Image (tube, rainbow, N blue to C red; front, side, top):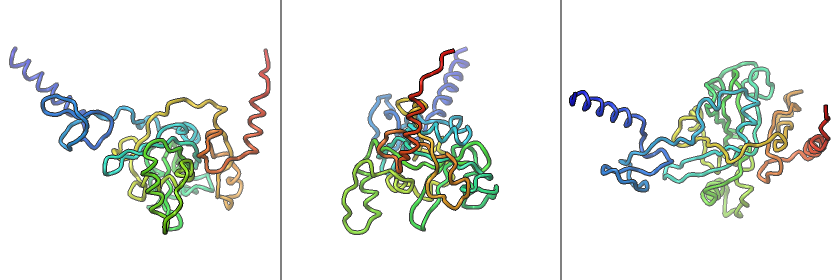
Amino acid sequence: MPRKKNQLAHLNAVQRKSTLLPAEIPGTLAVDPDGNSSPLSSKYFIIEKNTSQLGSDYFNQPCISLAKSVLGQILVRKLPDGRELRGKIVETEAYLGGEDEASHSKGGKQTPRNAAMFMKPGTLYVYQIYGIYFCMNISSQGEGAAVLLRSLEPLDGLDVMQQLRSSQKKGQPKPLKDWQLCNGPSKLCQAFDINKDFDQRDLAQNPAIWLEPGPEVLGEQAVVTTARIGIGCSGEWAQKPLRFYIRGNRCVSIVDKRVERETECSYDLPVAQG
């Protein structure tokens, strides 16, 4: 019996160890060989997995649903030096795959550039525009469907975001206001130091970038639904209401005042009593 107990104890110890990750994963205190907790200071410390990270099941939903759902969630970027940047997602656009004339996957065509759009939900699709800037998308359910992240509200690491944005400009640019740091798809990629290296990464399992739940659930009235931006050559698809943003948030790239007025009026209508 003592031998069996020792074997079980050893098995339990191995199983516990297998659930731990290297110290590059953020979220808890490190533990030294004596069992004492301490702040992260060595790569040899072992810490528990970040349990607040949104997992694969979260991203496994239809494109429009995901585009609305990620509003209010927190994008986290862990830099190589260990610093973490955080921003609340405040604006998105849905691209529905083969039928969508404005999508990179229109017609169901898969290329080396857009391959991430056909991968499992939660895969990052990062592409370059004008040969300089980057835009970041998250794949969803549906062949070739993905959600573009258009704007963030910066929360943590604003000084680092300011430096990263300034490094992209010549000379000595005037410091940006906080709300200007991430109010556009390429701006947020600059501020979070995201480039083509992030293409095809799994947002649900990556130690350098992930999503965490936001502090509150947005109600229907908090979300504005309107047309996407910059796709005027896509026929009727240019006018389809596939852009979503948080009403009243200053970090939204472009506000649609007409749609906001119309929807405000609709919410003011009295509810019929049966």
